[in-house]
Length: 189
Image (cartoon, rainbow, N blue to C red; front, side, top):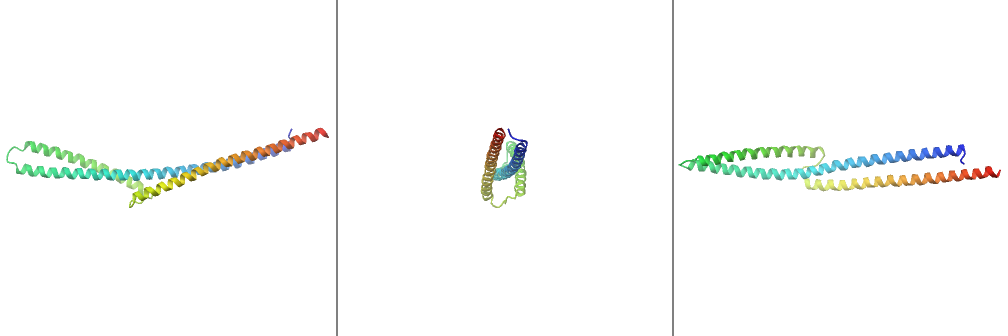
């Protein structure tokens, strides 16, 4: 049986091993969480780049539709002026075009508002608006690098945990062996 001194040594060794393990493990967890947060932030920025590009394309399409409606409206106005007979059907058609133009204009303003909000988020994230494709590629590279760092931190914590457990087991075995030797000495003497 281990003596009081051996129990004390075992307790101190256990406390030191556990506090070092907990501290190192906590530090690895904090680093892992920090890297995860950075990855999420970069993923959001990359998503905003994609959203910006889609919103810009939608705005371009809506502007094209609005311009087409305006041309149709102008042609219909000329047709009404040039018609000498009943223009009520043409005027109803003109009213429908005006309603479609108003609806399309409202859609365009809504799209531009969303684009403006996305632009602001990108600027706050430090993304250059000059080369969005290049920025997207840069963000993808950063995400990959941070993911690798996150994996390395996880592996490091795991390896440290395994080595701490092995060292503790070896020390416990040595103390147990010392206790047995001490017990045998007491029996022999």
